[in-house]
Image (cartoon, rainbow, N blue to C red; front, side, top):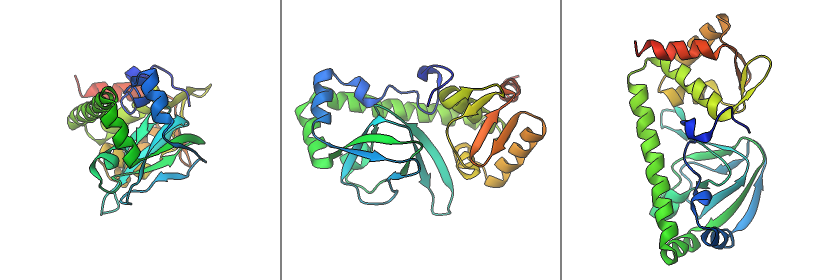
Length: 236
């Protein structure tokens, strides 16, 4: 999946991935501890609430991380791709998985058992510090997103999310910017803290105004300039 600008400008996956933070020797040593796995698009890599026994290091392909509340509410938490680590929280705490991870395209990964991963971090403190910096960056990014969304209404939050996805996972076409991330209206709603009905209403409005075109789990931004104006309206 290719974006229309650099990862540093995005909000959903703007952190430097874990493997890229490691020294070459530490990276080779970690990958050597695991076994290779391959997944097809829409396969579950991780199921929320299940016991965990390994972390996953992504070598190729993109995934989405979602969480479902007891009410059935689903939120998109992050997009993770090549170089990222998945399941590190459960590995360190021993708790069940806090979210589900689904492949958006064919994924190549390496699975490392929890025990081996913890022993690796103990033996290589520099790698442990790199993991700590990653966790800190992810927390700061989430806090920043919550702060930005706090001053926006639902329509403005949806416009901001669509622009964010366009920057990180958008392909320019003759029609506009096509989002390469297949997300449902339910997932979009969960990402902006709104009901599915509200998101459906605003997407219908944006379609009617020729701002976006949508299909089954597909979205094309026809007029991103209008979405930017919707976001900017809150700042005037």
